[in-house]
Image 1: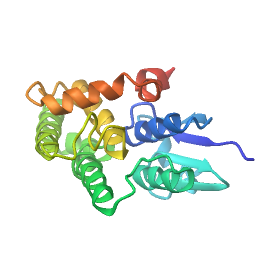
Image 2: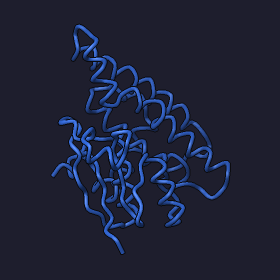
Image 3: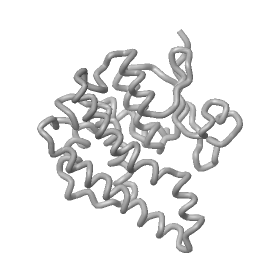
Length: 211
């Protein structure tokens, strides 16, 4: 069987998600760093892996996969681990929660967008910090309201972690990194804290991935 290789960057939210999923599976993998600050993602070598110039790229099962949520769904479909519920309504809700982060908050806060914002703004760092606080804060505030649902349990959906929790934890990490005040989001804090206490989530943390 071929080696599983994850091309990632330690602080990348999308990479963080896939690391969590792999650790939840107990899948052994080798991590290869693609330094976003050095623009290694735009190198010919990496563009051959992913023409979008993004991380992560997961080499597994003889194929190279991109897009973190598509990767997580592939792992769920081939390993049957419950990243998504079995019922259509539950699957929709987990996707809804996951997309609220991965498709609404994340795209406007990724490195490419922020680099362009800083280039255009006269006060680059101040503009960046205000931008992050607004979009992460607004996005997680809406996520907190989505959690006000009978289907929420110990985790975002039910009583075991799903793809929604895999998306939430990296976004809470980003909120703390950018000093976003999330003290008024009790469900977000409770669920993310519960996840952070699990070994798979802890092993995927950027501080451990950086080493």
